[in-house]
Length: 405
Image (tube, rainbow, N blue to C red; front, side, top):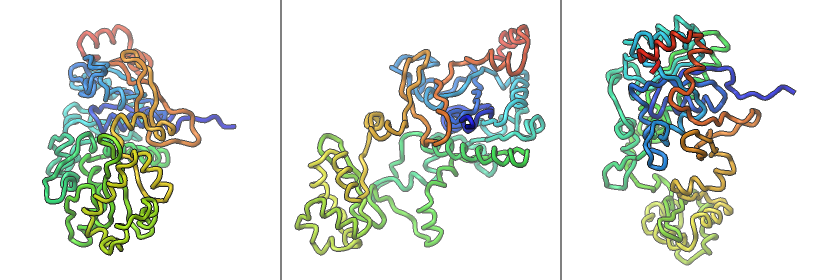
């Protein structure tokens, strides 16, 4: 029987990115078996090494977000802004398959590390540049964080209540979408490279990766010139369609009823109270037209149950419903834990911690790489001595001159 391997075994990735999108992409590749070497420098630490500090204790090894989105990687420290640092990167590229970067426009070109240079060293190299708005176009040099990316992508304009202003989202939605998009772009390019022997340059816009997730409102405008309005948790076409208060403080369940058959099943579950037979709820259009009143009546039923009870009752009747989980609920959710969505890693600084695993399971591969996120420069010896074969006295000089730093 052929021994099982991780899907990306024997692939080496140089991760020169930081913060969210690039590191998340590289972490996915690492979890699938690639050897990912994260290039960092003490001159300018990755923000995520301090976001947030585990147990509130400061330290470069205690950034909670760093621990999650850099799991499974190695770390070496190189100041790429120095010519000898750039030379080290070039030598690493020669023995690698993929480079991921997320610098400002033209930064790598200034250091002589752009794709046109690196592909001369490794013609089959795959290089992914992840930036806010892409490497071409009038906004190529614009900087961004989550909030303005959400706005520019069209996402913020859709979020809010009827008649109210845009409400926006917290969290790194654009980073997450861009990171996953970059992962699959790299996988496609690896396949192409194995077939043709040629590399690829991936120019990925975080804004466009976010916009690509908004297909329905974009298609509606392109086909019908209709602009979607903000409607809170309501639907453009179905009712009941909302989040409903359940038993207990701040406990909620999401319910979607989009067909007459689902409505009939929903009425059966509720015991067919008299109000369900009212003319104003007799078909989908009328339910949608009277959804504010309908929502109040549905809430009277859901308040008698916990979110899990309401979800289970409705799902057993074939009615789409789901618990509204906060972060504590997610961490303890039985279904997610049963599917190994979380994994425990043992970190030298913060001990055993539960972190996110891959959002998919593979049927025919060995367990994914669940090594902890690397300590800063943890693998300098491996990278500079074993991979690049640099003599000890030369390594000492590079450390002294803060090239390895």
